Length: 326
Image (tube, rainbow, N blue to C red):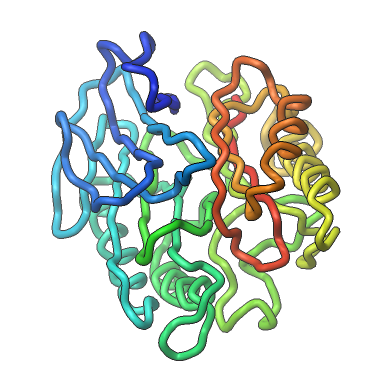
């Protein structure tokens, strides 16, 4: 399985032709619920504005693909991996709908035998705005997610929780039955699921990264969660975009380093030059040039990188970065 980015100006990529598609996520200037399109799930999310370029994230496989719809879930599987997407429409309070969507997804995974979650995305409209009861939408979302994970027998995987440009919540995720993931924490950060109550009634349910082993015995793949300028559980470098970018990069570097992977029982390791399929979320439009320039210095020239001007999960965070190493 491989993740590829296709820019809207391109008609396609040679490395997609002839391969099975597990899922497409169009980061676009408008949103649509997930559907089956050309035999695979397609989710369109409102994440691109006038100042950022739309693109489509495509998950491809060299194995035969079977796709289906179950309730509001749209999915595809190849025998090793499954991709699934669902949308929650705008409402006054989200937590019950989030819990229900997650539990439906978990039931599908259990029925089909994909019991190892390894990567999730949660795209939340007005993420730092308030719901109908005065609770922040992200905290509202976290309550529903935590309730669902309380009933899930597996461990909590890597995830991104980020703002989107339209109301509602879009969810998509990946799971496997081809190996046992290891969920990684960062030595410089408090695990998100152990955050104190000041961040909400339920802590965010995600690991800092998830490692998938390789069949050939090599280091495998590390899926890096959305990462920001947080040390311990505190935001650092308030109102300083350059310092927040550097702190974010330092967190990623520590997370995927040989020393940290060894602490989690994984041999080998990676650096920033090994990242690909990178998404960079920037809160303020005027910060985009600086962030682009800094990322160009540290990430490989061949990497797929997308920049999105959206809100981050805390009002004092200016940037968040995710990617895949391996």
